[in-house]
Image (tube, rainbow, N blue to C red; front, side):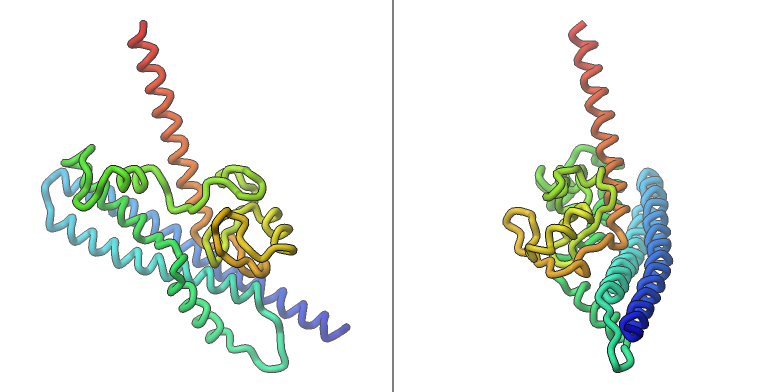
Length: 248
């Protein structure tokens, strides 16, 4: 009994420490996103002034910053994953090795959504639109424009279990394996009896609760989706108003 209590206490301290580390890392992620937004706005102004070389320098700097962003994101996910799955044993735990191994696995996962590609696309699109608004960027077709201009990198827009829009989930979590998003309470109840992702056609595995959590960028992406929805709603209101005026 005493041994079990001690183990629970250690696991609890590890969990608390991970929360602090992830919180600090999330602050860094937020700062990087803000910096990229500022750099995008500066690049747009430079493009208006036809200072192409400076715009290119800024793009290179953004690319380096987004590489750091990607690493920070994977590092936060690794910390959460190791903390959630930690079980004290008789031997001393090499946490550095556990974190490094989990970080390497997450970074190499083919199902990992590359956040930096989405943010870099936004940067390039903003610059392109200065002189070519409405025109596809080189190598794009109409489908590319729609997908990158109107969507943020969330794989599903509604929770497959509760049916609620992702933007309305009280406690959203994401699968480490397949990257689908769910309501936390619903998915934890679901995986007790079913280890497979509930999204139709998905082969993702959810063997235990360690494989679903609110990773470092999920809340950012949900907030971005809320903003896109508001913009879309405003555009529809303006369009409807214009049609009514024309009819009159």
